[in-house]
Length: 506
Image (cartoon, rainbow, N blue to C red; front, side, top):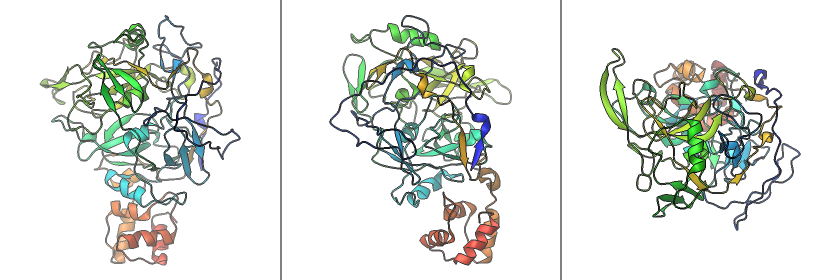
């Protein structure tokens, strides 16, 4: 086990913590559970909706360039940001057997991700054959399920590392991508190479993004009923209610681009359909209305939502001359900040950036689809380098309701001053594309193992061998023999031991 000491969080000038929030009532209640890894008392969580939005856990406030010592008061600039509206608090239980219960969504997760990166085509099989915590019904999570465990309290990595482990040796940090079960199905004549081939949706555990990518990525598996199914109702008054989340949305967007400060003010002053309690959505709320199953833009349900069309200009990469224009759809602002400033390694420096959702192509400066329609990235909040005057302007779609409590002073207790990022031993991925050599995409040259197996007259590809080896944790010889047998291949335990030694996995 390797500890990356440089990610210790330094002492902060803290905000005053709020008292406990009033709980919401429901007929459906999750049983009380106790965290076996801590001295915390039992946590009881009430579930009101079939798709409860787990809070981002962001408790500090920011302006356009830095962290604030105190959250702004109502009526002041930058009021209405993420820390000042709190949804259902994240709650996890470490079962002590390699599995983690999410007490809000009801899902059960593997504590560890796979010890190696693999193609998306192998990810579902990996989960389907996994045996962790004496459970065998693991599956590949949907994008919305995987997004539900994102933690925005203090930045990299974007998971609660008390519960969810990463792997590797502390290098290639930005390549800690986790596959979802959702393929990226939108095609464009102008695509970046990372969304060519057979791309699927990933969530980056280190940088927090949602992107469509190909290549080899890590896998974190899940068990439980499907989470993240919307139930939209058109209220006939320019609002849309999602009965699954309890949230009410603007049916139309703002129709014009604006900067983050203006977006917050727009929300606080809005009166729509007789309601005056609208807010800018958190990035988790905003992602809840994404439709990542679409085959063409926009990546939202256009039977209920109206979107402003924008123009995407495409440039020749060699001459930089305009070669085409495309209809595109806007980014939308969230009220969630990225608490990392440039290359800063802590939350003390504040932030220049806010999280946005791409309802259409998320394009490069040349106009090529770079991250995918439906992706989530962060951009500068301020006039300089904001991107709102580039090819994809940033608009606003407001929300109200849901299990959300106003917390005007924020909550500094979401910051863990003693946080240490721990990496379980594993193979580091470079996150390369599908054409990257095997040793680069997995950190290990499986072709050596392929050659050894050929000497035994067992013919497999490197990708197939990755799946046959299995993990985490590191497999026993008997487990590998069983994996081979499941693929109608015969190998002895002695031969497996030789294979593992060849691969430096003994």
